[in-house]
Length: 125
Image (cartoon, rainbow, N blue to C red):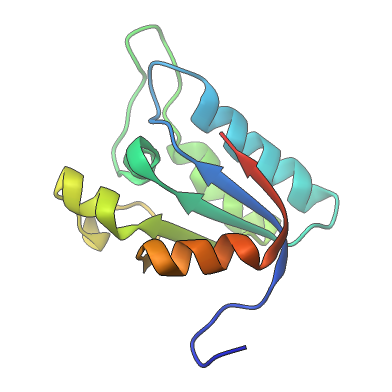
């Protein structure tokens, strides 16, 4: 393992969809919580529209869909502390770390590929 690199983990959940419009983000977060409840070491990677799920102050969606804030706040209780966000998506949406509810490590494409390679199980939502 190189300096600054994260250790290999059991489960990587990649979240590619925003909070509203579909249930993919919520389902991915639920899968991560279930994995952690069963003793898996879980990491989350927010990519594309998924980075929007980390934004503070989200309310309900147009169809009464819940915001992701309450679920994100539960991650620490489940010992899910490895959070990553795609730098390219942050730039596309003009986001900075201070916009997010939780701290996440920013990764470029090369680091994302290495992260995926280090996990035994990868789920994409």
